[in-house]
Image (cartoon, rainbow, N blue to C red):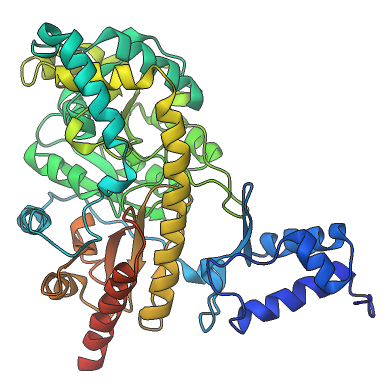
Length: 490
């Protein structure tokens, strides 16, 4: 039985013992530590003392609590990888002068690779079919096809099916956005939502501000529409820098600010509520619009130590309609449904016109089927399980990167979504690694695609929304070996 010594509280002695066990590998990353009750019996101390010890270790970043499950070892502290939480993360990105995007050819090549059979797809940001409610969706597709045959085979003109828009307006209340069904336009996925919003607000030659690194789809849309981009430094935890953005707004005639508000692609950043307010205030001060991509917003991880899912978006604080909010069911239900939506604010009429004279609206069958699916609460039950699974998968891949990649590799630890940003040592060429991985039937996305600069040539994005297996661990090990081989060759 332990007793307090010197001036060290008993709970800190308990915590130090468990910390030592984690450091020496007794408890590995992702492993559950003994329950509070069991550990109190082992140490011969009270339950409250162990509770204090676990809470202290959680505050220090050694453990993470998972609701109704217990405490687990956090990925940042795997044996042999002793780094602080800040040192473990990729560094703050850098900005550049305005320029046109020039890497569309590499994007097209990468998308072609995704269409080929591969053993392990860690590239495309698409959840594995096993994680999606495909059978339930099939039931609802069959149902609406049978009872609404004429409707699902007819056009649904913009803004789309009214019952579904009403359901989405209700769901937007979860992030503090009060809107009506008539404020929403249904789209062919989030890609069309972003595209029609860009076209509604900008003209060829206009300048838009984007995160750095930025989702390559935005960069490609900007190139297709003849826009110039200026990249704003972005933190891997808290998102785009308001200070750097303000400097850019003072210096350049920026027409639109484009941001991923929650669990961004590719770095997984979640903009805190206070910073969201700050960004909206900046847009108001300089009279520019904001295009907000929240496609990963419903995938906040539960039970992340010291973190809570961000339950607001920039649109929450929009008082004059300058924030155009976009999202989709592609990351939560099925990408092939091609069903997204946007709240264009003051540009509603322009966005509706852009859509009407191109695609009319999203697929009618998808609109009816998803509306039917949302009616009975299945979606929220599915989301709860999906969040747990994606959080667990992300932890396992983070641990595997720490174990298998060369010393000096840093990886994000997002609190939502299912993509990781891996910064390898500067001597690694991620585009070369991408081609080498293809030969091993492994798909990744090189960091060069997420910027118009060469700042991220040693970085890559990994998709973690695939069931964890020995094969996935071996794929990460192979990637680490290939990266190490590049360093050795130098």
